[in-house]
Length: 136
Ligand code: NI
Image 1 (cartoon, rainbow, N blue to C red):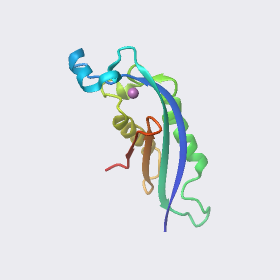
Image 2: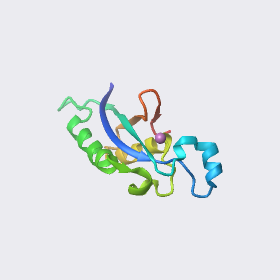
Image 3: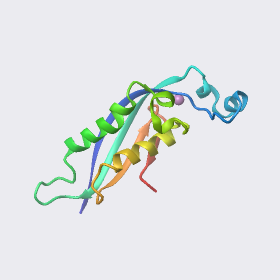
Image 4: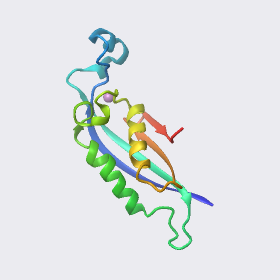
């Protein structure tokens, strides 16, 4: 019997989508307004879902307080009110698209979970645009 425990979280961050090895024109052609050199912000929402067996002793798959603390440390403290391109080492050489952000978040949270727990992360860049990664 495997049950999924989810926690919703939030962070604000700025980014710019571009490749350092492309010209400004080429970046504009591919990334449009997202290539604005002065950056732009998003209110990111995320849902981290942990799936595993219920511990017969505690009745928990994961203590949601532990999940909350992992998300706070690995995502909120690391990304909130930051410029992803400039302030977050993972994006120094990685374009901070929603796709790349969700993979970075997944890897950071997954590293803190027990090995027998599965993780699925959904990241909303806007209320209508969201991406999902579960390690495959
Ligand atoms: Ni953007």
